[in-house]
Image 1 (cartoon, rainbow, N blue to C red):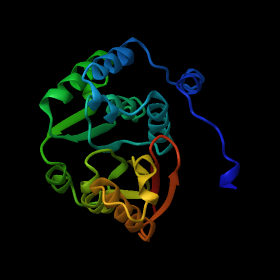
Image 2: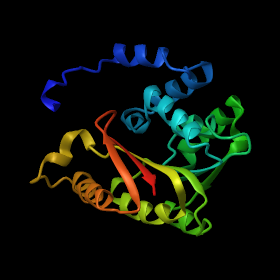
Image 3: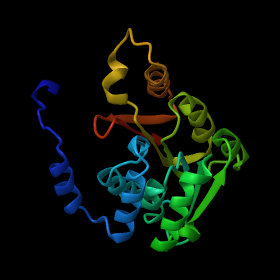
Image 4: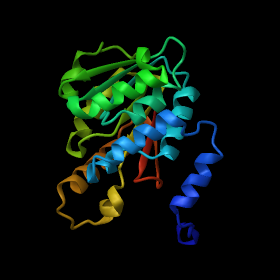
Length: 220
């Protein structure tokens, strides 16, 4: 019963949860988070350490060798996925910002995972369309411009193998997706996207009302 849920997620509670997970924020991760925070309000695009731990776990659960990320920003989510990859794994990152991803490049090298990450600076749809058309991706993470989600989904689902996982961030958009009369562009785009995913018979889907809403979709 949803009306019985009353847990308030405070920063202290998040820190507690992260401290009791298997992958902790070490010096490299903390430097990255500090450098990202110094960018100002845009730092909100970075996922938290708790979601990062989940990404690492999901990557390991599917035994990912090939992963794709759409929206890399300063590289924290890429770091979390890369550390969960199989020893011969490779993560293809799609982004358009040389400035922000330069922070990620330095961090990946310091963390010793830069050999597992292939960063491609170009419009994500172009990068995705250049990937092999066959089903070969084990895990995909979408966390980019919201109006582009449907296009990224359309390119990724055919390339994810049966049993593979698609993870999509910010799908509840601060709760705005339940406002039927809303006109905010991103919220409307996510309403349409969520409806499309729910009706997609190629995947089994659950939306977690955690973080800012996280879709987990398993390819059938």
